[in-house]
Length: 265
Length: 274
Image (cartoon, rainbow over all chains, first blue to last red):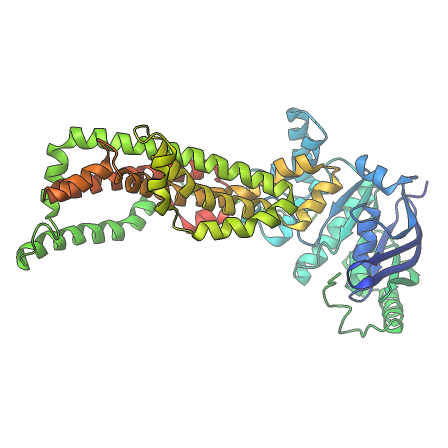
């Protein structure tokens, strides 16, 4: 069954009467890793937030696992990871990871066991009693990912999760994320403003154009799995990066400028 | 995953006590030095005792009159504590209501901030007319009103300074308003609440003592006032010393509670406040 079906999605923000998204159609199948990329103001984060039922579309329908996005949110059908790790300062690492489980009413012993598994999964065993401020940015993001995975959602929505990290940490976390994706057989929708990150991670890259946000083109990424550091040196990788870049240039984003700028919407 | 990170070791308790003692040493030295200078300056410059008694004379008055100062202090402390508890509780309650009903909050906040700038202490004699002047009620009311506004303003600021991403995260877990309040707003507000409560302890003591001046038999305020009119300055200063000790104790009590509750707060640790 299709995981996410977006049809005719339009979003207008009343303030300033800005059309953020216009006529978006997109289907995401199970096991896909789909990246949304585009210049500032193309509404890629807005698409993610609409799928997550955090904002309402002006028109169009969104189905998640064959249900309304609202129903899917209430059913805990997805886990979300934000640009900033959004950890709670007053909770230890273990308690941050356990937060969704607490809200789902899991018993303490079961929570504890699950949190240990998750910390092992993201290579943070032994850090359960630390507070977020005691960890580096990359470690904090791993905690956020562990938290999103805690209740085993089949769908992960990730909004520029590695945007604030340095290049080396980002590349390492990219590989770790792909490992998790393969092992958990999940579906991931990933927002990024990095072309190489999008190509490296995805099975499909959705290029969006700004003002109003539309789908400008979709690039199938046929690089072999599993992807490794060698993938980044594959000639096919460069071809695909170029293809995505050409599409972005076509939508009026110059390759060094606004694509790399932070999305303000 | 390729890189295995390791937990950082934590300092031992003994080491942290030693560090703390070293941190405090300069402050203690300055304090002792100030007392010595004070004591000597009075002899050297021949300062009259109605201007400033010697520290030794104040301490000796404090000791010889300890039982009357103690009972006066207890009376004033009860007024201050009562006012502190009532004013802070009402301030927190009101902040919760205003945080829940933002329209109401937007309407009332400018008034609260303006009221915060009013010298409420000036109302103290009025409270004697409103409440039974022989009961502690008017003094408690003064202390309570003084505590109320800073606690209200700070708590509300804390409750509303939650980051939008935190709300989004909670909503992605299907959390309702109540759950967001309990799990996010309250913990976010706690550091704000505690800094307001610390200010409130000081205000409560000021409120109680100034209200005492308008005639609370056997209180610290009246002890100071009467001793001054009898030219017994050592006793007046001993009463001020008593009030200071009680004020500091209240402050320290709230600080300890803060330390207990906010163990997680990195800014508190960096500040190293007590």
